[in-house]
Length: 253
Image (cartoon, rainbow, N blue to C red; front, side, top):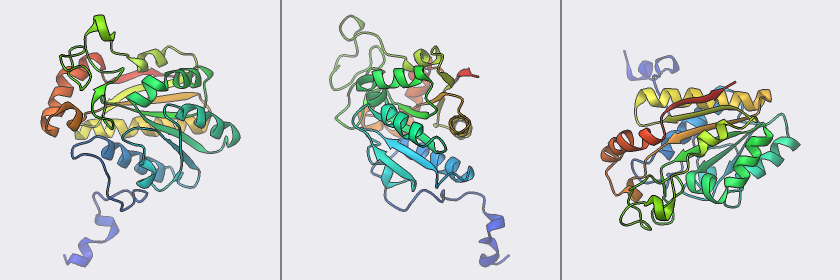
């Protein structure tokens, strides 16, 4: 078989998603954001939704997500992505509207917007990246930081008596009548990536079918904030994060 024959479309096993452009990502090596961006781009392309998708970018490490996925984007103020998505979807009900947010954006300054959008059952999808830390601003404690976890603002570990308990906001959202699909996934292994892609696809389809709010949490790592190599960060996530944030569907109606 010649090189030209090998390059035929019928022989392609894997390729960069068509909607993922050639801009160099600013994420740290080993960061989960790049993988999730790829999944989002693949799902939108496979749904044929590139011309109807409107994404809402957060404040945080993914603040410049609009530089990488070629769909329409709106940049929201910190934590306000679900509020912006609410307006966009209500004014454009035929559009695929989703937010892409980190734990600091969604579960701290944006807690009210997140909970109330989900409680109203807005027909949007929320992609929630939970790495248990404020990655962009220097590795401070986030609402999702685990007990005993060392951060820039908890150098001796998170203490419950001082800092309170880790906020499991996804479990809270699953209790609301307005949510139709709430799931927790990861992208640290190939099987996990496949499950995460399937979850994102279902969340987007729910939005288009008007079923209510869908939330896809991706339990992730932060190699810079955690001060670990990607390999060690994945191992630490498996041994610690998954115990407090177990993977799987919390709600599927």
